[in-house]
Image 1 (spheres, chains in turn orange, cyan):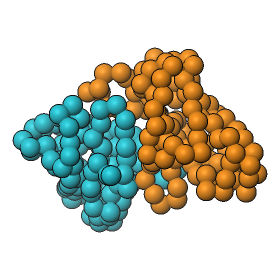
Image 2: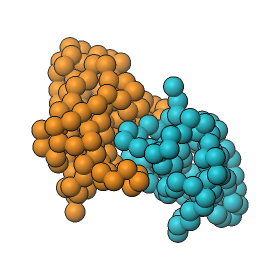
Image 3: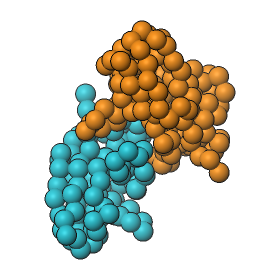
Length: 114
Length: 107
């Protein structure tokens, strides 16, 4: 049982380049989330999805886009990377039922923009 | 606007009970209170959740007063391996983590 898998684990981008981070979950979860975590800081919510075909903005959505074309996948895109987007990115998923707040996290993607 | 407020850091010693209190004055009727633990270089891990009163599991207890404007995570007899960041969240659809409380357990 893989749980939540993030691809890639590490990436170095040049300023202005684009990339897509993939989050895949095999638990049939409805809810999925993308976070960024800067050194010494808490996680900040970028975007989230409450089901296939739906997305919503979180706390820090600027500079990112997301898509949830398939229930098991949640993609995070950076159209034009900036050094300020250097961070560790975490994906998470959880069941649809609101009173079940147990989310499962991926191992993280460490992104450096130079 | 932050949904929760908790202490930035706490220190304790092995074998002591640790209580971390979180304030969530604007909690909505549908929100649940949940706590996560995070170790360096790892994603957060679920500890416990509750709606009101007291909840206990194998690793922690969660105390929620009747007005639900605060909650207290209780960790019994902490060990060095409990050194981590602890996050309090109020959750319905989105999940926002805040800064967390950095707990350091000393020998």
